[in-house]
Image (cartoon, rainbow, N blue to C red; front, side, top):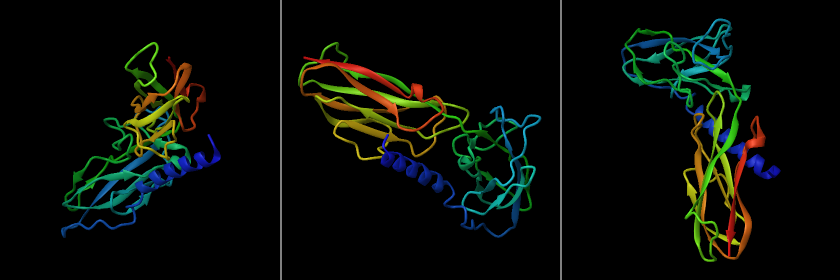
Length: 266
């Protein structure tokens, strides 16, 4: 990956993360009738089970707030208390901590109430003077292992003919304790002309004559790959030409970041 491409991907990731906090400074206006209080604890979920187990420490300085409203920071023990408007459906948000090497942990009954991939709680309408406690959330160490999904060629043939239109579809997913954005790239061989891009990943760079790029603006849960591919026409005879689908982001195990399929044509 070139330095220019790496910088572009990093900028996109930072832009998506910054959008999460864009609404934080704004004041959320509620009807007359008083305010409510939300309290909880943000902690380091060492075993990534969504529950605060013995020995798991609180996180100091984490930002927690009402979406569209004001935020506060957690105390030494990870505890926080914030005011929220009454009479409105509000969501509490634990701000991203990817800059500290941590991401939101899983939700669990009696544990974290924040979405695994969003850091947002469910909506709740509060009464004036109500104290809503137990709005806790765990963070896990960010450790992502990207890997490709199986690649398919359609129609499936051992040998294609010049002029055949072929679709290749693969994907990139990840495993790890948290949610992560997906970045992928398809590389087509010389001797084919790309017609269209396929899949549900959006382009993150301008696609080349024989490349397709894709990413997810939102974080995806482990085991949910995004699809990416291309439709192309075979221009010339090919012998064991290679089509590759690979992750376009860094991870903890780069050895399994790509998969390939061979293309023969006469």
